[in-house]
Structures are given as structure tokens and as C-alpha cells.
Image 1 (cartoon, chains in turn blue, cyan):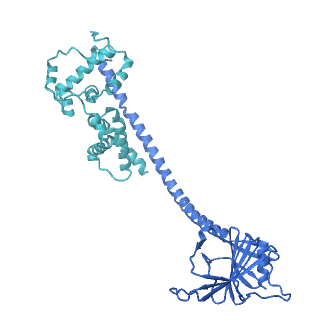
Image 2 (spheres, one colour; image 1 turned 60 degrees about the vertical axis):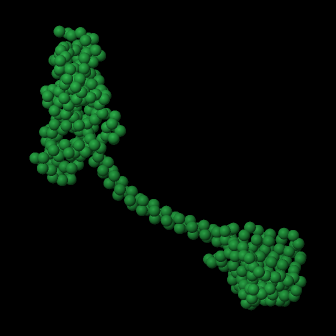
Image 3 (cartoon, chains in turn brown, purple; image 1 turned 90 degrees about the horizontal axis):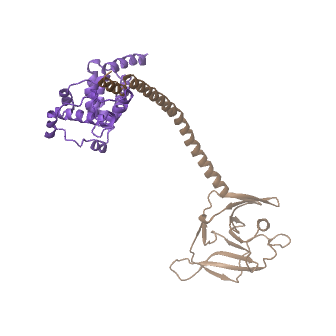
Length: 236
Length: 183
């Protein structure tokens, strides 16, 4: 064999027709497989994706609902009374500026019913200091005169960090220096009176109407039991 | 069934067109080492087309060349095209001098062990000037004349001769008996 023939043979081997054919057939087979797999994946993945998306939406909604429910309230049982305490967090509360004047040491109407024993209400024994206030607002905003009674306040404290503040008004809600959303709040019923009870930190807030008055009651460092006893004692 | 018919048709086209298409791809590609890949891509596309539509046999070769052109264009980035431009002047007048050289170097004068010809072909293929393996393919594989090769590659005949002469000389030094003829 001549060198020319040997070189020719090397070139023919390099661009080998049967070899290239086999490689083309392999590629065709691979493409077919991939196409089948892609089709399969497409038909499997689309329903899976749909299921995942739907499940995700459902889960998210459930989670939201659960979070809301969890955030909304806890139920506290005490002396056969169930308090549904709605939880508030910082984002729920907005402080308000109110233009008022408070007058202390005045006689105010007593809003609760006194029982046969003359007992007014049950409060923790250390809350011995009681003060009454009248809150006035202006009839005319531009006026300098605080000439309209907005609400009354009974402030009961231990002289330190524990206390109960009872605000009440007859024809309107007592003036608050804060605001929070009351929608969807869980209602507590004590002696046929519906109350909305909220908790924020060590404080309870209660809103209800009773005996012709609208009440806002706010506590500081009062326990659930003490709070329950107090509410039961005033809502006779 | 359709697939089987297509396979017969494909095999027939492959048999009839392989060499011509390979020649076209080798002439047009920037690197001869890519020729096999490009050829495979062209026939793969042909297979896919056959499965999609009816092809008329009378124009199949031109059709494949059209596919090959697209594949070659896609295969090379602009940077690769620039890199593979030959640094040799293809129509340099100095090349004409080669015609005056005594043709002492002949491929048959190179003493090389039989097994090394695959290695030599790989060496030729690895040349920076890719006209060299193209010329060798056309000259030694397809046995075209210098004139035909010059026409196919659109270069001068002396340039083709020069590439063959210089490469054979290099092969003799590198793989042969140091330039000593075995005559």
C-alpha cells in the first residue's frame, strides 16, 4: 500500500460514513426519547403545577385565616364564664389626638346596678384609690370653651401600676385617645350583655353597652381572673 | 409505518448525498474538525423535516446544501470566524515561485510507519491554516487535481501546490527520515 493510499484510508476513517450514520441515528433516538419525556413531563407537570398552585392558594388562605383566627381571640374560662379575648398587636392600635378637658373630684352618675347587699362591684383588694372625672369637649371646634360632657371616668388604682379605668357615656361612645378595628371581633356574652374584649400587652380593653351607657373599660396589670370577676360583678 | 418509510427514504438520501455534502461542508467550514458534527446536524434536521413533510427527491442535494449553509453559519460565532482567517496570503505573487521549485518532495518519499498515518492526518487537521487539511482532503481523499482544488477553494493553483509542498516537507521532517528519501 502506498503512502497516498494510507493517508486516504486515514481520511476516510476520520469522516467515516457508517460511523456518522450511527451517530445520527443515536441522536435521532435521543431526540425522540427527549421529546417523549418532554411530552410526558408536560402532561404530568401541568396538572402537578395546577395542583400545587391551587393547593398553595388554599394553604395560603387557610394560613391567613388561621393567623387571623389565632390573632383574633383566645377563650379564657373562669367561674363558668368564657371570655373571648381578642388579641391586638401594635399594628392594630392607632393613637388619636383629642381636644378635651378633664375635671376631677366631681360627682358623676353611677352607671351600674347595685345589688341587694349594696355591693357595687368586685375589684382586687389592692385597688383602693378611686377617682372620678368628667371629660368635656367643645361644642364648637373654634370655641375656647369646653362646654359639652363627653363621658365620665372612674379611675381605680393601687396607686402604682395596677388599675381599672371605666369610661362611659350615655348617647355616644366615650372618647378614646386610641383607635383599633373592631370588625370581626369575637363577642363575649356575660349575663346577656355582649362585650368585645381585647388584650394588648398587660392591658385589657372592653367595649359594651349596658344600663343605658356605652362603656370602655381599660385595665393595667389585672389578671384574667380579676378581670372576669370584675366584669361579672358589674354586669348583673 | 410512516417512520419506517421515512427511514428508507432517509437511508437512500444519506447514501446518495453523503460524499457530496461532506465535500461541501469541508470546503465551507472554518475548521475541518467540525465537519462531522455539522454533517450529523444536517442529516438530523433532514430526518425531522422528513417526519413533518413530503420532500421532492429531485432537489434534495440543493436542499441539504441549504441546510448545511445554515448549520455552518450557526456553528461559528463571529469571533471564531475571525480567528480562523488564514494568515497566509492566498493569492500572493510570491507563491508563483513554487512553480519553479523542483518537485523533489513526494508523499511516497516519506518513510513513516504504517500505523502513524492516522496521527499524521490529525496533525494536518490541527494546522492553523485550515486550507491545508482541506487541500489534503480534496487532493488525497477525493483525488481532485490541483486545478480543481484551486477552483473549489477559490484560490490560486500555486497556493494549493505550495500548501501541499510545504506540508509534505514538514511531515517528512517531523515524521519521516529527516528529509532523506527512501528512493
